[in-house]
Amino acid sequence: MKNIASVALSIIFVFAISSCTKELLDLDNRFTNVEKDLWKYYSEFEYQAEIRGLKINLESLNISGEISDIAEKGIAGSCQYGSSINSHIIIDQPFWKNSTDLAKEFVVFHELGHCVLNRDHNESKNQNGTCQSIMRSGLGDCIDAYTLNNRKTYLDELFFDD
Ligand SMILES: [Zn+2]
Image (cartoon, protein in one colour):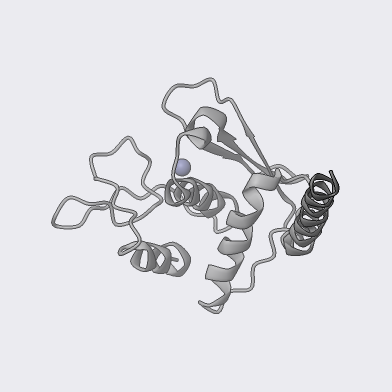
């Protein structure tokens, strides 16, 4: 009986520690009006900009974001901008549920490319048919190749294009 009680106690203790650690690790908890699942991609976008010498603060730019159903077929994300209040990103919930980290990053960065970097679509392709930019519309005929190997090249293109 004593053993069971101490096991229960230690489980509670471990749980208390881990929930506390989790709070402490939520360093990205500074994006108001941005759904939590998007925080790490927002942070990563700022970081990738920063290591390229660009200071971007998505919080002060007031880029809100949510994950919810986009009714239009084949659309994984959107960014409404040009509004005087703020820009707003929506990422499609079914897409989000079924996507890898890298695919999520691709779509969030693409939308931030519109909203923050003022990028338009770019359908350019490499000789092997792959897209030159993550700003491709998806309606052109280039092939997406956003892999861990190609990521740096794509992010250079995203942030340096002007
Ligand atoms: Zn787009």
